[in-house]
Image (cartoon, rainbow, N blue to C red; front, side, top):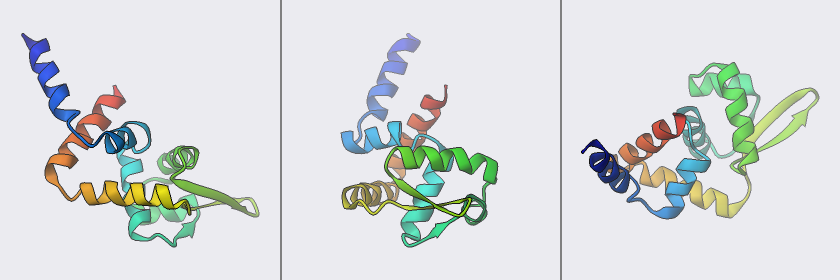
Length: 125
């Protein structure tokens, strides 16, 4: 009986725009990444170090660093070196910026946020 409920929940939670569902499952698949994407969406011209980004996002730098690297690998962020210091900024790719904008806009809807949270938690298992 529980599996029917689980199937219903999965079907309900998968009822998202397939592009945004993939974005959540493969790119913004942690709450730290979600915070970082939101921060950079709100501050699209920011280019800064891990420590400063973590400070602005209200997170620990040691937790933010690997998440920023994942975001670079997924095409959301760009990284350049300033001496020995990596500097992170939002991608200049217009298609990715449009997708980020669609994600942030969708997050204004409570039902979308609930579904996104579900998928992030489910992916953490």
